[in-house]
Length: 172
Image (cartoon, rainbow, N blue to C red; front, top):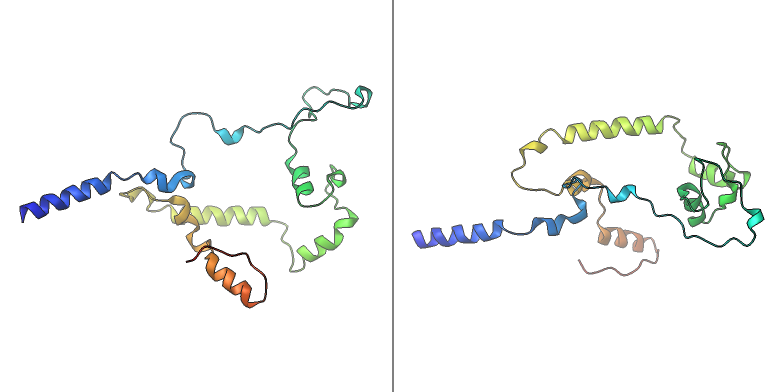
């Protein structure tokens, strides 16, 4: 009996030394370092030789550079829109009126950001009641978003039943 107990303790000790960080990786939502946050550094666009130096805009101290990132315009361009239609006003171009009508067909809420902020605060407050009582390290990302996750195989099967061509997926 003592040999089995010693063997069991050895196995449990070795299992406790597993590298749990390898499984969690970037999904751990907490920072363990006091160093800089690499996500705060934005890469700039590539420098380009202008075709005509006279056509360059006049420099504005504290203003934007041609190589600065513009995420809104870049996102519009990536989705097939025209970034030139982006203006400083909040008006929507006439060319996008059909898209706006379709997106808001079920109604819109003017205070959606405030509502989502309040719901997220309530969700985090409710789910953080017992987070200090964890005995082992957990995947907080998975725990927070578990009920929002989709099973890719089930979703692929559902869309295939509707006749939609779906890419192949690894076996379950």
